[in-house]
Image 1: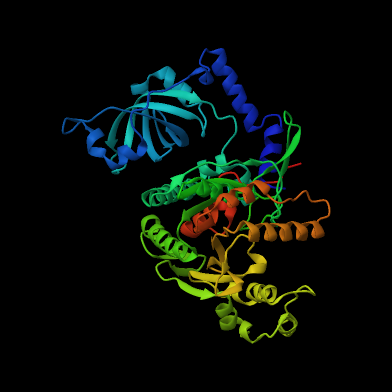
Image 2: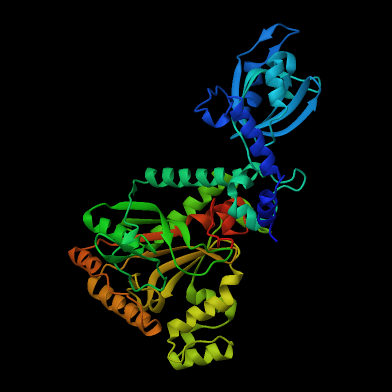
Length: 505
């Protein structure tokens, strides 16, 4: 039985903590002290401000020093009653501080009420800051207010909330009892701020594009489907922001980006969630090499600003974010698998190499397909330090521009850290005739694999290209994986406040 189910069962039983707390609430209501009727509380300072600027708030009776009075609010996390006085730990959104509550200061009636309050209750306190005899910065309470009653107990003090499934389902409890979890999400917010500041400083414009799209495109990702009642038509949650952003390049915005939620109706594991946050950006008059330079500069800057160093720990490795290797896919497969693409005479010869390397490929696999399969089987797991892999076969790059010097390859790269792909970039295909042919092949392939698919060519995007798309470099990467990297988190669920979970029966 999970931790959450145990808690739920316990709270349904007569005499459970839930029932006890409900009875206390009923008594408060009966006495005209319903805490849920309160609409506000005037907070003047946070725990962090008191602890970091104690001199400003300190009251010292021996020296006669009188600091600013304090009013703060938060959750009561512990309480030690010692007759006519009590010690409480109060936690707000920025930290925790000790309260000293004395009957003679708050009054006999309020002190009697206070002793009936529960751990987890949200309270307001007014008073002054001082140091206890042991030197701990504390707040001496002169008045207390019960602001909200907690009807469910927090997880047991010494064991806390440790079951990961429950932590993800009840993130609100996780954040209360495991305050270090907040640091991950504070860092996530800082990462997004730094990315936006960097791109804005480079002259990029942040935009929003549709989440609901009118049809399924031919890409391999499977979309979520919904229905628009007024239009009486199925619509699809977007699997990318690319095609709309490139329409904006056509329209004359030379540098655009979007931080957007993406939805893919696919598997779930430590690196994948059905909805996730990506950033895509497009810059006119540059190519994939320009995007490589941008990635390297951006990631190095983020490591320094967020982690304080270019060399950061991640899952047992020290990752040097200031040192990036660049390899073509052909070079990488030769380096790590010992197979030289340039020695394969034709597709049949490539398939024989795959067979000798014990890599399964389709019966009609081309040289490019075999190259990609060998990369997946032998190379990716070796790419621990930051590495750009570029010049991908045209077979798996339907939106990238062909290399003028070798049309079998495209100007595309992906970059890898700790054996994981973190982002994808192209010199964008701007030939509408070539693009249509690739879209048609993509849709044809999908229909062969899924006869019931509704995938179709995006004709409006082709029309946009026919008006003229400038030479453009494009880049997309997942924010969630980046946050995992910069917070040393093993699972994507650790960096999503509310990851997708199957409901409990």
